[in-house]
Length: 67
Image (cartoon, rainbow, N blue to C red; front, top):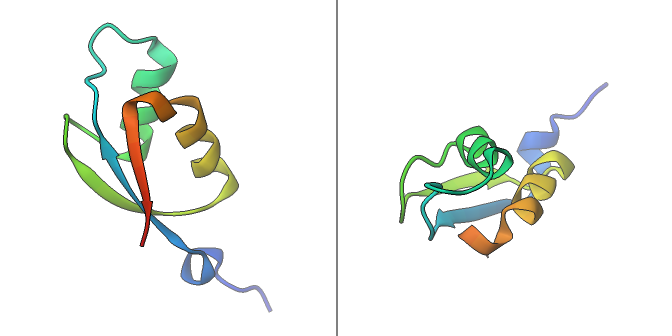
């Protein structure tokens, strides 16, 4: 029986601190993929390896807190 990884993983609160204007396309795509739309917009995501990789790529634009 498979377990739902999203139900068991820890959650992270991610806030965009810097605008994507003038940033590389990769960083803009990461922000959009995470669901962040504008500065100071916050979301909660499950800490999966894919999400953690996206956060590491664009860490200079984000504030990450464990929930």
